[in-house]
Image (cartoon, rainbow, N blue to C red):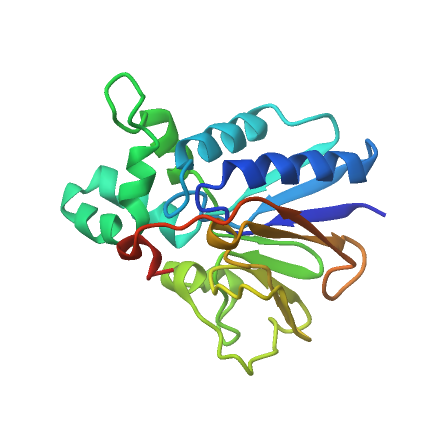
Length: 235
């Protein structure tokens, strides 16, 4: 029975990404797997550039038997927009973009490489398999999956008491930070533990042929990080 390993919001925590990849490789014992990243690779944490470099390289040349699915988060969207539309840069900067940009300071021109922007532009907003919907933020249960709006997929926040998924499918998402998480509900799983600040990243493990929530949770830890207050308020 194959498994999907799901890494939620990293926000520039390259140390946690490396730790997560190491533990996933160890747990998999060489078996085929699907690795799904839920977006928000950038902003707030100190190493946005390194996170993009590592994940994009892994996606281009994954280990034997690994299938890579990289989804877009709202912060990835903000970064892409800020590069392509400079008039939106102030909005991005106020939400952690200043820290993301600082991670590129040692590049030859101090700017964001075109390859990184194009990688962000190619990210999918959602992944659907037999039993689940994987998305950064959430889905509208009243709309067909092929008619979901980008705003819903990247920005939606579920009410705390909303335990529903999408029909028979379980929804796996991040975005809505819950430091004591993950939040495990009947129809959805929120994996965002605010890892960029807490230093605590939780990876969800799902059996591809079994419906419902995770069959295992893998926790990796690093040093907590304190970002400037102006960069830590908005999700």
